[in-house]
Image 1 (tube, rainbow, N blue to C red):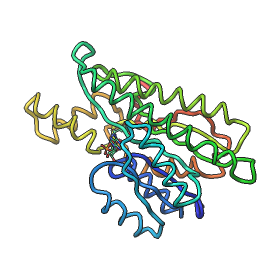
Image 2: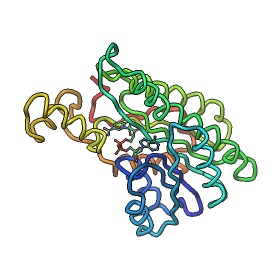
Image 3: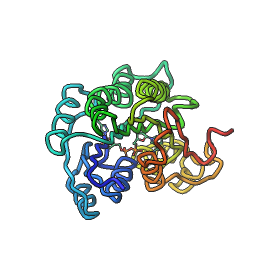
Image 4: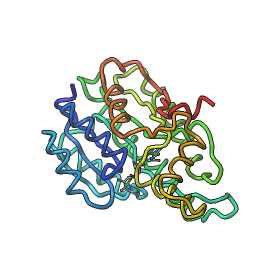
Amino acid sequence: MLKGKTALVTGSTSGIGLGIAKALAQQGANIVLNGFGDAEGPKREIAALGAQVDYHGADMSRPNEIEAMMAHAAQRFGRVDILVNNAGIQHVARVENFPPERWDAIIAINLSSAFHATRLALPAMLAANHGKGWGRIINVASVHGLVASAEKSAYVAAKHGVVGLTKVTALENATTGVTCNAICPGWVLTPLVQKQVDAKAQALKLSNAEATKLLLGEKEPSLQFTTPEELGALAVFLCSAAADNVRGVAWNMDGGWAAQ
Ligand code: NAD
C-alpha cells in the first residue's frame, strides 16, 4: 500500500515509534529512523521486513538538528511523504517542584519538535502528486492530550499543545491531499512507562507485577496495555486512502481511559 512512499518516524529506536515504523515498513514504505541509543538493531529489524531504511540521530530538542535530519531524508529518498512526530520524554513532579530545565526539555522534545518537523515537511508534501498534494502527518500525542493527571504539568501541556497543532495543521491543508491527525495512546508498556512502574514499585514497596496492576487500575478501565503493534495498525489506517478525509482528529486508543 505504501510502496514508493517514505516515512520519517521521530524517536523510533524504541517503543511506539519503532512499532509504527515496522508497521509502515510492512506496507512497503522506505523508513527513516531517529532517536537515541542503539540504531543498528532497529535498522536491522526494518531491513528484515524488506524496506529500505536510513537513520538520522538528530536531537529533537534542537531545531538546527531537525533541519539537518529533514534535509538528509529528502536527499536520500526524494521527500518525506509520511511524518510521524513521536519522540517524547516524561518527568513526574508537582508544579512547585518541577525543575525548569525539565519543563523546557519536555516542551522542546514533545511539542516544538513536531512544529519544526511539520513546517519543514509540508512544502514537499504540498507539491507532491502533481501539485495536488499528498502527505500524512501523524502526531503521537497521548490521552494526556485530552485529559490531565497530577504531577505531569509539562507533559500534559505539551500533549494538549500537540492536539492543538494537529487541528491547525489539518485545517490549513484541508483542501489538499495532506492530512494531519493525532494518536492518543493510554498506557503502553515501553521504557517510558516502565520507569513509572519502577518508581511506584519502589515508593510503595511492591513487586513489578503489583505496581503494574496498580498503574493500570488507576486509569485504564480495560486493565490492558495498548501495544505498539495496535498503534502501528492505526497509523497504517491513517496513511490509507480510506483516511483521505480524516482530518484533525485526536484518536484515543486508551482502553476507555478518556471515556470516564
Ligand atoms: P520510549 O522511551 O520507548 O521512546 C522514546 C523515543 O524517543 C526513543 O527512541 C528515544 O531515543 C527518543 N527520544 C527521546 N528524546 C529524544 C530527543 N531529544 N531526540 C530524539 N529522540 C529522542 O517511549 P514511548 O513510550 O515509545 O514514547 C513514544 C511517544 O509516545 C512519546 O511521545 C510519548 O509521549 C507517547 N506516549 C507514550 C505512552 C506510553 O504509555 N508509553 C502513552 C501515550 C503517549
